[in-house]
Image (cartoon, rainbow, N blue to C red; front, side, top):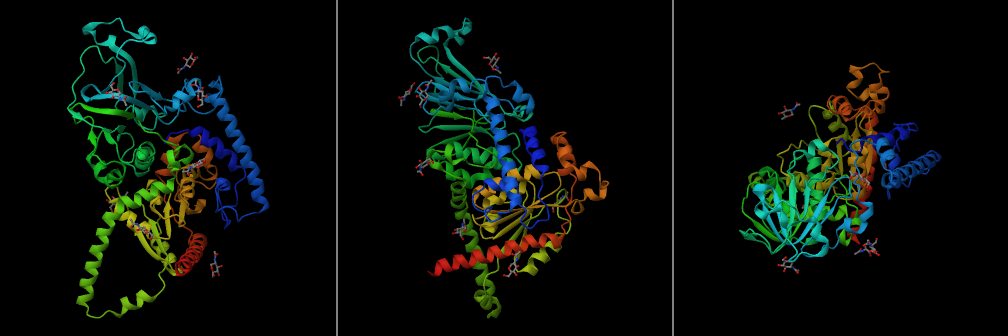
Length: 536
Ligand SMILES: *[C@@H]1O[C@H](CO)[C@@H](O)[C@H](O)[C@H]1NC(C)=O
Ligand SMILES: *[C@@H]1O[C@H](CO)[C@@H](O)[C@H](O)[C@H]1NC(C)=O
Ligand SMILES: *[C@@H]1O[C@H](CO)[C@@H](O)[C@H](O)[C@H]1NC(C)=O
Ligand SMILES: *[C@@H]1O[C@H](CO)[C@@H](O)[C@H](O)[C@H]1NC(C)=O
Ligand SMILES: *[C@@H]1O[C@H](CO)[C@@H](O)[C@H](O)[C@H]1NC(C)=O
Ligand SMILES: *[C@@H]1O[C@H](CO)[C@@H](O)[C@H](O)[C@H]1NC(C)=O
Ligand SMILES: *[C@@H]1O[C@H](CO)[C@@H](O)[C@H](O)[C@H]1NC(C)=O
């Protein structure tokens, strides 16, 4: 997550100077101003001020952006970060960079995004995994502009037939060289069709292939969705399942974990690129994945305007068969129990009672755990919630988590990768993120903003120094407590070591209760509205 980090800190430094009272019940992030609904009931003068600050931030960002894409990007680059690299060719070749229409027999690479490259090859595409290559047999006869490219090296006459040669690592974190080094670099080679030997196909496919890697940060739920699954949806949904996924750095566990989703995106079995040495032939190859922003889909960049909500609909379809199975099992067990206890008055009365709103706590142990989680459970119950504590780990079946969250009204959790599960909440439900000291930017960028985009009602709970275990470890006026942004400025490693890896949260439940009450009132009102709607 090294990311455009300096950039982010620049923003946060700015907003820090005018921080809203953290205990304010209406506490909202400045970013809430650009959201659609949830923000518009707080029209106080303070927020007007915020609005202006925010406007200036936006113009600042725009200014930066123009700097970036102007003819002299160096100034802007040094202001941002070394790892924030912008491709040179993008502006000269705007149309081609989109690669929206690629003529048969050619390759088009879009390297304009700072997050990922993507190359599209159309025509006679053949894989050669032993040399990490994909060949495209293109033009039949040399045409004018190609003559200059013919290589002198006629050793075996191989290279002279190369029309174009591109290299690409099909992973979506282009700005992080260390992680990109873990991804196989593919050679994409366009050759003349009528010279030399064409390797014969072992398997002929008549639908396009999408090539991507499951190395990198795969293993962390945030990254699995952010760097992999969502980009895969963005890149392939318009193909209506008529696509074969070819996976570099293939992991069996990844396939098992995401099988439900993959089956909604492709009708065909996946191919393990490194493990399967056969030559696969395709009419088209899309190498690399498109990505928009963190855990987000920008519908204006999608064919048929797909949104994050559409992605969630796909999740619902993906998990439904498995969940239906689980529900049937439960029903059977329920009937068995019923038969045993001949008559069960409690279940009958329960059926009549109004169903309590359900609150789910996404629990962590170790760093960023809530040390008084049992008290949190009691408090939530005393308000009137039914409470379930989930401890998802890497091997937890996602359909089971989906089943719980899809039937919940509120999700509570401390900032961390497991909050990626907000994608499983139904639009209109509440998401409370507990924000430990020093994690404001990441909390806002990775979870708050995308969750609003999904239509969740987001509440950020920024803890006070006293609610952090760091309060026991440092003096009150230590910059670690008093000025986290100054530490974050030193780099991601500091953020990680101090704020992410060494902080336990001890919730002030009197303070936190206010959020829970708000969430409760909101959930009750929403339930009534839904019921009203159903009765009509
Ligand atoms: C960017 O373009 C300039 C001028 O065309 C060139 O000198 C420079 O080498 C290019 N940089 C990269 C990284 O391609
Ligand atoms: C880019 O696209 C626009 C409209 O789609 C077109 O008018 C223009 O000629 C294209 N430019 C190049 C260099 O192909
Ligand atoms: C594209 O080119 C390949 C050979 O280069 C040919 O087999 C294929 O039929 C062509 N496809 C179309 C749609 O023209
Ligand atoms: C997609 O969005 C564009 C621009 O926002 C709009 O003109 C178009 O009608 C939308 N298409 C669909 C299918 O909603
Ligand atoms: C999720 O909840 C909605 C609304 O209650 C329901 O219609 C849908 O079937 C549920 N999805 C799954 C996969 O259980
Ligand atoms: C978290 O819980 C798991 C299983 O309950 C345990 O194996 C693991 O050691 C715990 N981790 C920490 C840091 O306490
Ligand atoms: C929630 O609703 C109750 C009763 O309607 C009300 O007394 C209370 O003030 C509300 N609390 C919040 C935080 O809105």
